[in-house]
Image 1 (cartoon, rainbow, N blue to C red):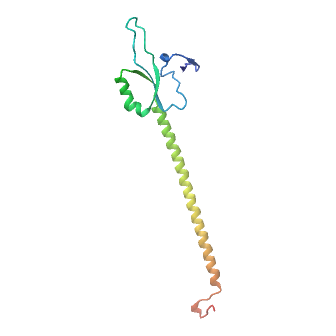
Image 2: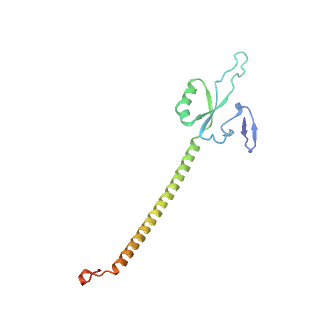
Image 3: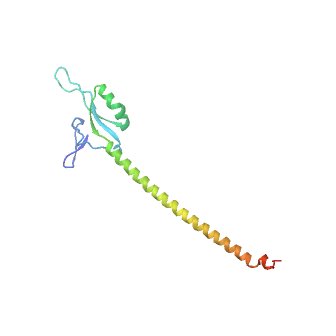
Length: 149
């Protein structure tokens, strides 16, 4: 498994040597828990380690609500290599910022549409008034005693 060294280089090592400090989270899997786990067992005759650790990935909610407790009850020892809590908080904040920007654009757009509508109404009213005033130029007031016949 590839790990990152202190000087920035990468090195291929057995899973046993992977730690949270040198673990490289694969792209696209930052939102999951990455756990190195094993049921530790040794040979009764010579004390040699028989078990081998492996890395398992879990959804955040499932791991926190169910798996962490059940793995302990089943005898697994585990080391959390990647905790997605900070990553998910950061993503949620980015999402909120994008939604706020979208709302501001939407509000600005709606205000602009309202102004355009008001201008169109004013223009239509002005045109109608002009049209009515042209029609009434040929007519005279009934109070003056003249008619339009």
